Length: 157
Image (cartoon, rainbow, N blue to C red; front, side):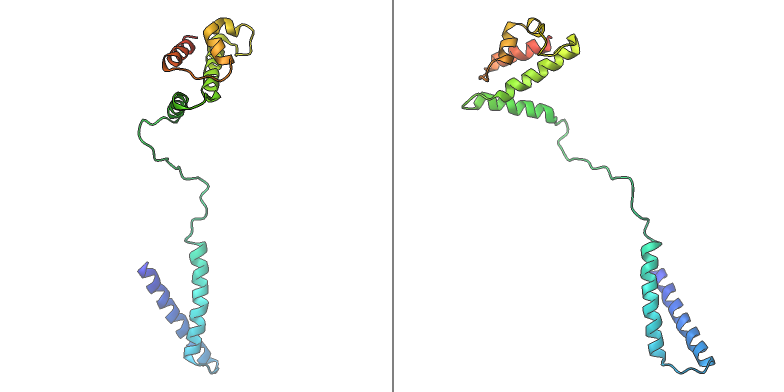
């Protein structure tokens, strides 16, 4: 970088000298300071343009990969389910969030293993009476043992 500026300064001195010699040969009178200032201004403008256009590689069309900082082994889905279960166990009033998540899991298992969803007429028979009632009834509080039983039944589908 330092060498580049040294070369530019040397080129500026050479251009000013050549211009002074050329002007004196045609018998035109000028002040060397004004000529040097004019040449320096023109050279600075030219160097700005050259540095901008030549040295800049241009825009990158490949986006940089951004890595999220997180604890190793952290699972967003697991933490969401844990939060929903904890909220269900300590909430004043029962929420439909846990029931809806259990419905989504049961629906996914039914589709994967039996090719049907919860709206199918044969689904309650496969689910069993207890699981079908828990998934289709109003929002209610599930105890820890009942919740474990429901999850086990969904896993067995």
